[in-house]
Image (cartoon, rainbow, N blue to C red; front, side, top):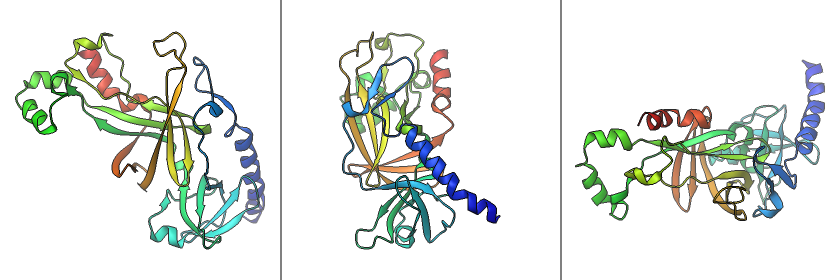
Length: 275
């Protein structure tokens, strides 16, 4: 056991070096093999982030976190205030990639701890389509109209989908919600789904989750124009492993963990193909 503890700091340092060299801050990263390179410097830059990032080390407990920053020596910080305020997003385990917000009045304490490794994965929420003829109606009128629509139409077209995102390594992100249609003509369907944001990157900004989506910039498509980027900043409200609550502009959104993007909409895809 003593030998393992002796070797663990060396392991932490090696992991930190691998992560740093792996391109978390590279100026250019490929989204996939079939698209052009995305230059992070061309996208809106997340500036002013004061979060400290590193690896959770031996000694981390319910009251303290031992973090080995990617630049510097391991430091021990009190998490009592963060825990009392519900600002520990994912309990850190040894070797996890974490981020902490230092207390401005006491540098030995943190006001927030985020387990970034625990956040990685696929997160979705259910979305229902809208009948095209109802789009300009109020929600109350929509509910009344939907009550009189034949059940067979509802079964065939009112198919729920899962929208969301997948958070990957090296700050890469992927949108969840796209379903391949059996007929490429959208106009033949009486329903319409909300647009799916094409998420490509994710970062943290002072304890908030920043999702970067892209429009255009794909050669050979109708969106082949120059790429434009949009930042969505979401507050981390709570996290318990399989559920995540985010807040944007005062509105809370509940997400559930899925195995992957394909599994998230497997049922919707099967129903679409059958229809």
